[in-house]
Image (cartoon, rainbow, N blue to C red; front, side, top):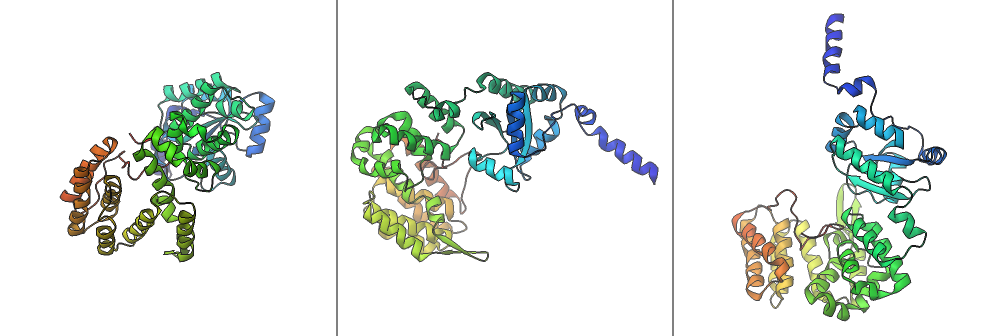
Length: 388
């Protein structure tokens, strides 16, 4: 029995990277976040944080195959205070996730001793590329975007670089905060700039934020600057997105129940602010609620009535939502396909042509939603991600 046990231990040890057996990889600090900041200040180093979750496959892959390597350990142990932080269960991890807008796993943060994010990256990386991001962080040091912005740098080229880099890292909350601070300093004119508009378009979601309110007031001017299609879509995505609809639910045990009070409040705000096409958007919200409740016949009936005189943009939006939610009901999907046919005949925006044709094909050829890996619909945008 002892021999079997010893053989099992030997067999297991052979499956581990050699560096892991020798303890030559990254040595992680196990203190609190405040203690890490103090240690970084004392040693004049950046803090490297591996932001992970227990369910993340690439996180586990990094921990098993990259962090234990000698060359990785030699570099990171020399230059950084290294920490691992679970983003969903650990107190410090939850704080870090919110503070640094961590939305993907693994995310690698490089933080100064003052708590500013100097650099960030994400995803599984081979050892050489992983060391390369560490080298990039060292080059930046205490000269990162966040620190420069917080300390008052406002050069136009720097600001646009900061915003664009934050969009590229999908840090939607951060982008929205930057834009609202710039609005306080420069006014609504920032939305007439293409770089800031792009960032606002893909990241802004807070309908109570000052810049979102200014957007409504500047609506007509922005349509002339960026085009009616893009600006009308943004108004729709602010007030009638799937994410917005999800805020209308309350939990009763394990069940989601639509709160009539929340819905009435949202509809009243839309009417009071005269959100463009708000009556149609209210019907679109009802459409999403029906789809999520699997009330496909009722959703289709609502669409047949609401879309009688709709433009191509609205027809495209509703048909795309129908394709995404309706499953195992070919008859209803075929009816919704007629909406997309009408949109294409009416002339969809050129940016939507490819998607419109794909949605029409999916509605007419499948009884279930079709979505290729890595693909998402422009009509159903993912916050913080630019539509390709």
